[in-house]
Length: 306
Image (cartoon, rainbow, N blue to C red; front, side, top):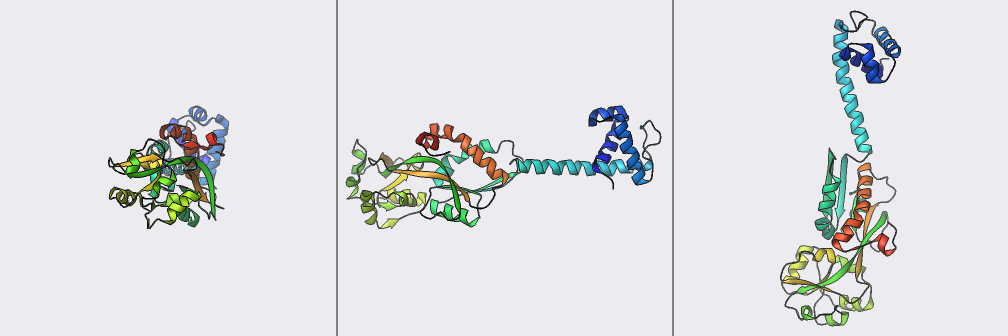
């Protein structure tokens, strides 16, 4: 059987013209390379060189060199592709996230992650937390970024950060004219528009407000349009209020429990792909910088495990 290292030794000798130069390139002894060439010629039942000086190839030698060069190039490229994939440098990553993180945090994060990733493909979908959890549990995405829910069957999580919640209303609302954080009791006369983020809030004072709500909107663009139109007020994470329209304002809430937890999600019982593992590490290492930039609280700062 013709071995790959025999073909490589022959091609290097044919290109360099001497056993000594080939030995230096391959980090082998001249005698070892000479023996390899003899074994290859015995396997082929023909001479590869016109003389022992290894400078002139026979007709067989020219043909073997041409074919072997293609074989070695394809082999080395294939090995490189395998190594790059195993190191998370290539492959396809299916990522799904809540809109506020997708719009503010992920652009810079993915830009830095993709530096030097030749052949990597990333598919990003933004949707609400419930849809993120459902997609991860079904295996239709590799990694998700969302808030945890009541049912997390089939999902593993890693806490990333917590984000304060804010009341969002029109700038001409009476609520916008106060100087202190808004108390729950101040919201009694204002229709509350529910959204997926508010599922986490369980305080009795808030639940009384929520029980009176007659409108629920899942899409953040539609939600903010409803508030602009005067259909009511809503509550959103701080990240989602960074770029509010001029006619809207975000107000702090007095309740210290008003925050959302954001986690990294992946499907239970499935080994993550190398590129997914690389993304998890990149995200974890980037958290301190992201926290300083956007003002959220990471696991290390509030006692949650990283």
